[in-house]
Length: 368
Image (cartoon, rainbow, N blue to C red; front, side, top):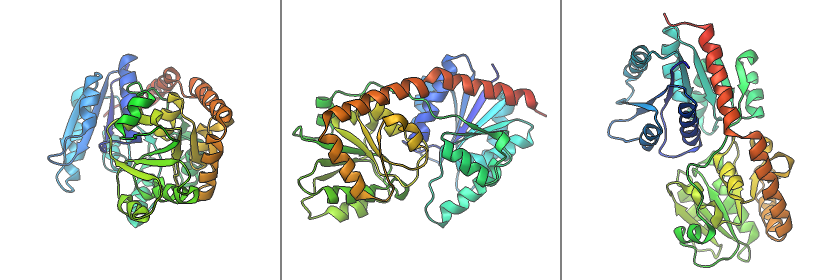
C-alpha cells in the first residue's frame, strides 16, 4: 500500500480527533503505512500525538509560532519527500487552506474529509469561505453525511470529486457500567438523568439544552452537561439561583465512556456532521434524542434514535419525557440503534473505502 500522510491541527478532544484516531489505527492494522503531521502552537502538547503513536502511526509534530504558515507548508512538503508519501489526507479548515495547496504544488494528490461546518460569526464565515475555495481543487472530498454532499455541491465543489463516506465507529475503550459512570460524575442517586456531551459552543446548542431543562421543570429528570467552551458561562448564569436540576460537569477525558450514567443522551445541535457522541451512546445501549440537523437524521434513521426540530427546546423536553416514560419504546430504540451500527457504520468497510480512494488518486497523479 502507498504511504499516506494525514495532516491536522487537532483540538485536545473532539469528534474529528476521534475519527482520525480510529481511521489511522485501523489503516495501520490493515497494512497501510500511515504518518500524521500534527500542527500545534509552541509549548502545547497535543494529546492526540501520543495516542496515534501508540497505534503505530508515524507522528510528526510541528510547532508553528504565530502565523508562520511558510514554515508549516515547508515542513509538510519535506515530510512528503522524506517519507515517500503518495497521498495526503487533510482534516479541518487549516490544513485544507494552508497545507493542501503546498502538497498539490509538489504534484501529490490530496484527499480531504469534511467533518462539518460550524457556522457562527464572521471569522468562521471567512475561514469556511477559504476552505471551500481549497476544497474545489482537491482530488477527492469525503463528506461524512448526505446533507454535506449536497452542501458541497451548492458551494461549487465538483460533484465528481465528492464521495459520501459516513464515519464508522468502534469505542476506544469499553464504556463504564452505570454505577461506575455515575460515581465518576458524582451522581449520588439513581434518578432519571439526561446527558449532554460536547464542546459548549453555539453550533452545539448547549443553550437549547438548558432551555429544554427549564421546559421540563424541577420535577423533570436531572440534566448533566459534560464539556467546556465559550457558551459555558452564559449557560451556567442562566440556571444560577434556580431550582432546575442542571449540573455542569466540565471537561472530562474520554467522556464517551460515561454514557451509561444516563437514561438518555441528548444532542441539541444547530449543525452537525456525524456526531461521535451519538455513536458512543448507540454502541453503549443508551437511547439518543437529537435535533434533526446535518447528518443526524441519516445516523438515526429507521428508529435508531428520536429526532426533534432544531431550536425547539420544548420538543426536546417532551421527547425525553416520553422516552423515559416508556421503557419498552426506549429498549426498541436501543435495539434498532445496534442494528444500524452493525449494518451501516462497520469499521472494515469504512477502511476498505479509504484504501480504495487512496489507490485511485495515487494512480491518477505522480509526484514531481
